[in-house]
Image (cartoon, rainbow, N blue to C red; front, side, top):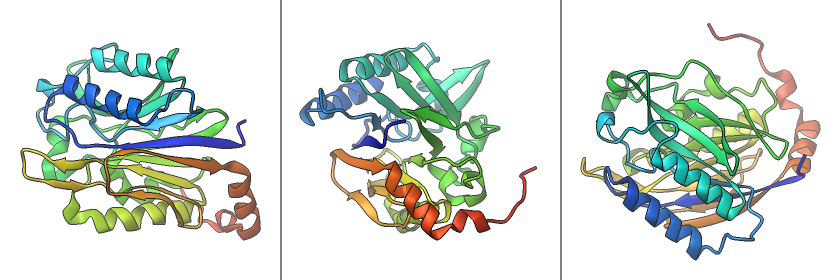
Length: 260
């Protein structure tokens, strides 16, 4: 496995229900960040990066071989990296808030958001995910999560020895203090790296987003933390993480239980 994982967090504003404009803007940010040849392993985009956090999925939903997924695959090939983020996906007449990870060869894996945001009525229009899916990249075990999942620690409990937990989000400024605290909590309690990628800007529902995208180490230290638009790189060190786990052994003392 790779001893280190080079991760890039892309924090941006989003145009409402305008996938092409969002794709073009993200592509411009990637180009300006000079990522080609930069040896980045994984680029992470926000939740619903093609549309903004919408309760009108029929207006923006795409299939798994749709234009935005194909664009992700092309970008992964052009930049020689994996790319992850969530999209509104339709399957069997249902809608999913789906976290996708793609590479040049295609879709590497996905996860459907389990905890739907009832405050916005997300559960009325989207189908919840049924299980966690640990994805592997360069030998690293990665747990994908989406926004509201962050509030439910049992769901991300590290029973499978994952190395990195990723949260993609549209988390509003009025509750961003919770985002900051919970990202650190998830890293500390699971003795793993935790990366959260949020958006910035305003949406038509008058929600303000101020980012606070971050990469947190297993002791709760922020390796990246930003309110700005752009691409922010961080190196995650597997050997350092394992030394911390071996020294402190907190995971060995966790309670044993299973979810029903």
